[in-house]
Length: 428
Ligand code: KE4
Image (cartoon, rainbow, N blue to C red; front, side, top):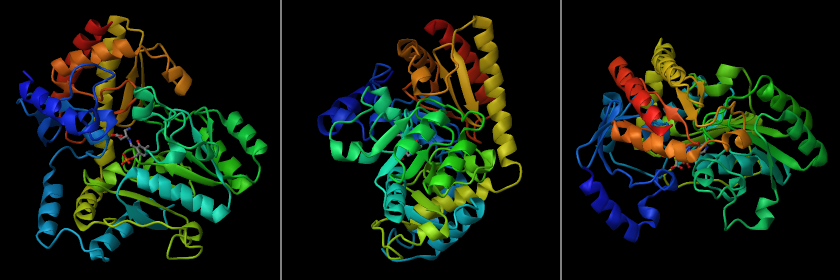
């Protein structure tokens, strides 16, 4: 029964575009109406009609500890007793910067912002300011938030809703963004040689999450590092999803590649609005008010509540055994899903890196935007509805990642595997 959700959605659509404050939440690609969520606890969320779901969206990545983790709640409660924002530096911002620079060694200096979009937008402006070059290279199907420079062949909601090239982005801006196929190093080398001295940055999701999960091929990240280093191009790892997800130091720790700049979001805020960008001191030293004074600012950047929440999460993630436990849980689910696929002889494929994964409705392999786009999105929609009906909440799009959290219990995982078998069978 979803009466209350339907009532709220009807009202919401009159006063909020599409009834949602982010298009990724729209159920357009999967049919039906979004569920309005009343509360979350651990790995579960409950909608306003009292329906409970095991949650694999986790607010699109931030909730690696699960919903309403006591450490996070306590930190926010305690902090807000002293006020919510001052527009002046606070101690918690220094503690957070220290924690981030310790956990991600390539980040020698870090600036807090309020979203992943602000982080990537600022990092690209900084790269352009430092190099005095206009162009950037991104990868088809990657999503770096909704700043103009990124909205060409973009992933996530742009891809899901069929608008990878957004209206409203002037040609003058779009022409400075060059897209390459993900995992295609030769294409990048060709672009670089054809635009010598013009490219400020290459920005990449070191593990793509926004066309569904697509891991970097053998040598891809290493090759990007080499070609950018040799051409004085700033290599930006967009770790808004992978940061603190794939290892304490993110994908760069997992794959052993050091970018010049890193963008962060999601987990760093523990569910509150936080983004961050940081990297080499010689580059960060040109962010206003320093050096060349590349402009960047924000009223609520480093907000004490958001810093307290993020700090509580990151401290938890530094404990021994955390990522081994996350991998243990993720592998249980992955193995169960693989067994179901085998039993059903389903022509689907799964890409997984650690606790982020996507099942594609195509035989695969899925290595880039072109192969991801072959997925049967109608079959995915059927599967989505069957999972929702069985109390499993996954992203309402074929082109997103699913996330296991530390709060998912072995029982949650077993229930999910059983539901997955039935839902996949019904969707085929
Ligand atoms: P935000 O501005 O949404 O905080 O972050 C933008 C962003 C930047 N980089 C990467 C790799 C990202 O995945 C994101 C945002 N991710 C999407 C879902 N894949 C957020 C969900 C939404 O747009 O509502």
